Image (tube, rainbow, N blue to C red; front, side, top):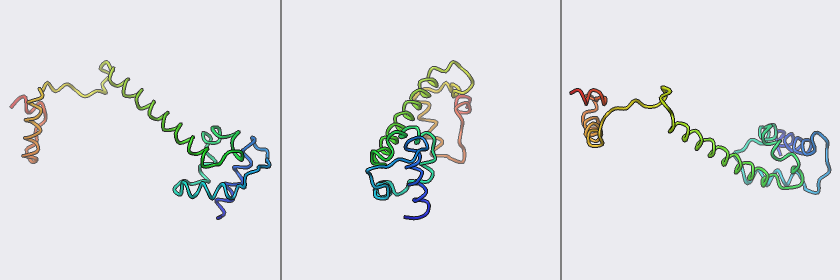
Length: 135
C-alpha cells in the first residue's frame, strides 16, 4: 500500500464516527485492497475528502465494505444526475422565448432534407435556412 492509500485508510477510520477513531471488525487494509481492485481508476485520497461522499457513508465506514458504499454512492449520483437532466430538458421544452431557444427556420421537412443534401453535396457553398428560403 502506498502513502496515499495509507492516508486514505486512516481518513476512513477517523471519519467513520465524526472524527472519533473507532475499532472495527473489518480489516481496513483488505477493505481498501478490495476497493482498489474493484475501482482501479478512483483516487481514494480525493474520494475520502469529498464532503458529499463522507456525508453519504458517515455511519457506514468500517462496518460495511468500502466498495459497497462507493457502489451505492455512484448509483445515487447517477439517479440524481439523470433526474436533473430530465428536469432541465422539461424546462427547456416549455421555454417561452427567453432567447435561449433555436430560432424558427420556417423550413418544412422536405425543405430541410433538400438543404441538408445541398450542404452535404456542396460543402464549400453551404447555405443557411434563411439563404435557402430566399434563393
